[in-house]
Length: 158
Image 1: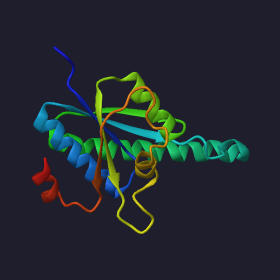
Image 2: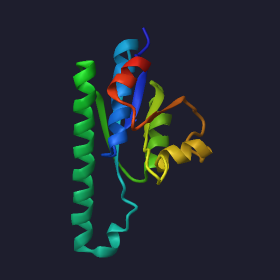
Image 3: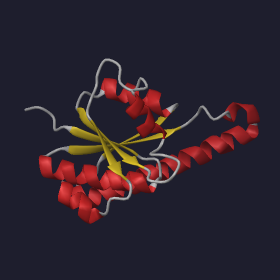
Image 4: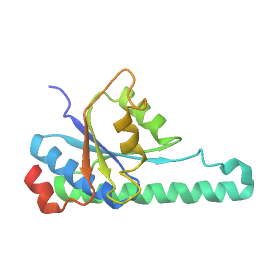
């Protein structure tokens, strides 16, 4: 028997990621899938230039990523009644995401939350929309969930 398909979420601490989590959790529950939640600590932020301050900044960034990962995992578990797979990486988000998609072939859908403010949907949604090298040898469907969808709207869709 093949492994259940995985819905991949990005835990970035935004409200729109919560909408994406609710959508992914309901889809996974209703289709026999599972949810994987990825958080990335961006180490490209120039931590090395600040000597002792750099380690404090890196630790704070890691703590924020862990908090976002835990919070979204709790949201998913509330719907699916199972703990999602959680992954914490360090590096640049798109590179970590690309590497994860290449290494885990059970991931079959990337679910992203789109911001609804004047600044646009967010950098990852923009990158996917422009086809900016997210997928190399392995492409998967991407579901973009508007951050302003209510839970009732998401229930109707899933």
